[in-house]
Length: 224
Ligand SMILES: C[S@@+](CC[C@H](N)C(=O)[O-])C[C@H]1O[C@@H](n2cnc3c(N)ncnc32)[C@H](O)[C@@H]1O
Image (cartoon, rainbow, N blue to C red; front, side, top):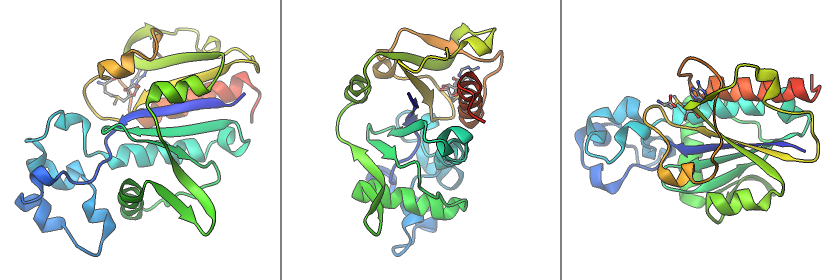
C-alpha cells in the first residue's frame, strides 16, 4: 500500500482582489507573467497584513520545497507515494508521481498560478496535476482501512520512531502535514483524525517533516 501524504492549508493562492491595488502588489505585477499573480509573502508582505490569517498565506516556497523532497524520494520513485496538496482556500490537487517538477522557484510559481486558474496541469495528453473535486474528508474516505495521523508539534511525541509505521501492506497510512509557516490547523483539519503525532522536540519546517516521514516509511518497508 502506498503512503498517502496530504499537505494541507498550503499557502498558495492567487493575489486576492482586496489587496490588488496595494503598491507592493502593483510594483511586481506583470500582465504577461503568471508567476507575478501568485501571492508571495516575500514580495507582498506589507499588503498581506490586511488579510485574515495572513501568517498562514503567501508561502509557495514551502509547497515547492515539500514537493521537491517528496517527488525525489525513493518512495515516490518506487511508485509507493500518493501526494496531494490542499490549499488555504480549500482546493485539492493530486500530483502525478511522474511529474518532473521545475527546480526554479519563479517557474514553479508560474506553474502554481496557472494551476489555480485552470485547475489542472497537462503536458501533451498527460495529466500532471489534477483537481480532486470534494472535501478532504471525501478524499480520505476514498482510502479504505486507513490509519490517519495529523503531524503537529502539539501531538504526542513518538520516541521510538521506527514504530510510527508497521510493516503492514494491508492498511493505508494517511499523513497530514501543514503546508504553512505559522499558526495551527483549522478545526476542519483537526476533525479528520484524533491522532495528533509529534516527531521531534523541535518545531520543524514542513519539508523537513515530509523528508523524515518518508524516510521512516521507506525504512519500515525496505524501500532503498
Ligand atoms: C512550520 S510548521 C507550522 C507551524 C506550527 N507553529 C507548528 O509548529 O506546527 C509546518 C508543519 O510541519 C509539521 N511539524 C512541524 N514540526 C513538527 C513536529 N515536531 N512534529 C510533527 N509535525 C511537525 C506540522 O504538520 C506543521 O503543520
